[in-house]
Amino acid sequence: ISGHLENYSELMYSPMDIEGRAYRVKPMNCPGHIMVYKTKLRSYRELPLRYAEIGTVYRFEKGGVLHGLLRVRGFSIDDAHIFVAPEDVEAEIGRVFRFAIDFLKSFGFNDFALYLATKPREKFTGVEENWEMAQSSLKKALDVSGLKYEIDEGGGAFYGPKIDIKVKDCLNRLWQCSTIQFDFNLPERFEVTYVAADGKRKRPYMIHRALMGSVERFIGVL
Image 1 (cartoon, rainbow, N blue to C red):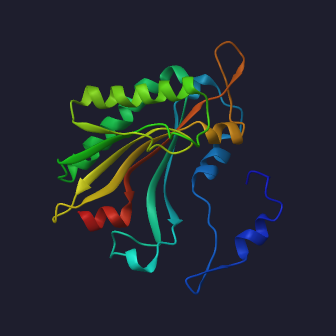
Image 2: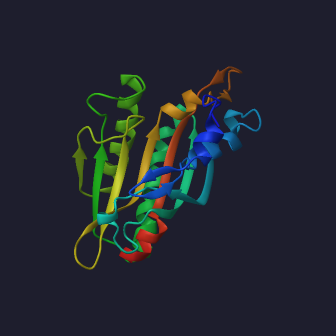
């Protein structure tokens, strides 16, 4: 999709051998939503722009860790991507976080383990200023909620910090479900822009959002 892989077709259709089985690469859903966004020139008046789908993704989990519906190799994810102007980031993060908590409570989950995962110590993209802004927005959403949370120092992805929401099953085991993830990388790599109020092209921020996360895991925990 990005145009950087000349042998993309060969990569997609040539199986790798993993644990004696043929396995093929399948991208995440994120680039697809970016390409929808880029079908036309966008204005600041359209932002925040929110896309969502139930998309299938794959992880070749080792045979020894497969665990019923809770850990599988192919699963569906309620994947959403939000394109937001920098000045609206804080409000949007708060809105998404409340949405996630209300969603989980509606299914009877009231005991959460919340984590704010911050900038990795070594490998990361984006400038320090953006990381501080993103982490501050996520932290404010957590503080306003009044819920207890922990700092997962250095636990963010290389492309942005995140909030992880874990819920307990009937055996008191914690499982990752909802996540709210900043992304500084993809808008840069795919040259995503919008026309701001001053008529200039600007770069939006991108937020990855999942409420259930893996639908299969969510049903298993439920």
